[in-house]
Every structure is written in structure tokens, then in C-alpha cells.
Image (tube, rainbow, N blue to C red; front, side):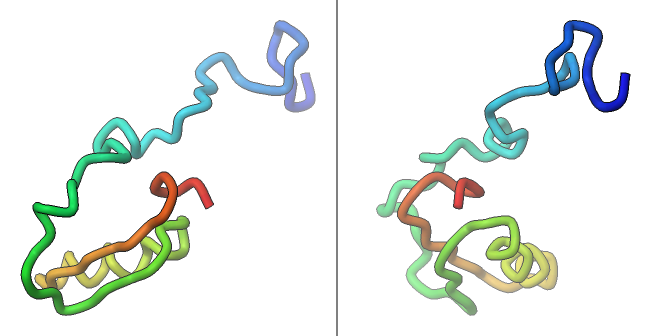
Length: 75
């Protein structure tokens, strides 16, 4: 089938247009009123690369704020 599904399209049967991470963290999950008063780090932009550093910092116990003008992971 060389990369094509049985229906002749280019996507597999389980293809979804919405990124899977939006299910666990909806785009509007944190209103500005809920932001911490202090953070150890602030990251601007939430592309896949832009979320790599905050992920590791938060796993190390740091408080991280990510700023994004659009939807997370969209850019």
C-alpha cells in the first residue's frame, strides 16, 4: 500500500486533526487569574520545541509559565 490506507487516502484510519495533547490539556485550561505569583522560568511560545525545556524544568520541581498567543503546539 506504500503509505496509503485501504481507502486510497494518505492517512491511516486512526488519523485525527486535533493534536492528542489537547485532550489532556485543553487550549484554554489556565485562565490568566490562575497564574502563579512567582515562577522559576518563563517560556514564550509553545511549539513542540518550545515545550521541551518547560517539561524538563517542571519535572525537576521548578515552577514554569509558558506564554502562547495561539493554541498550544500549533505553531
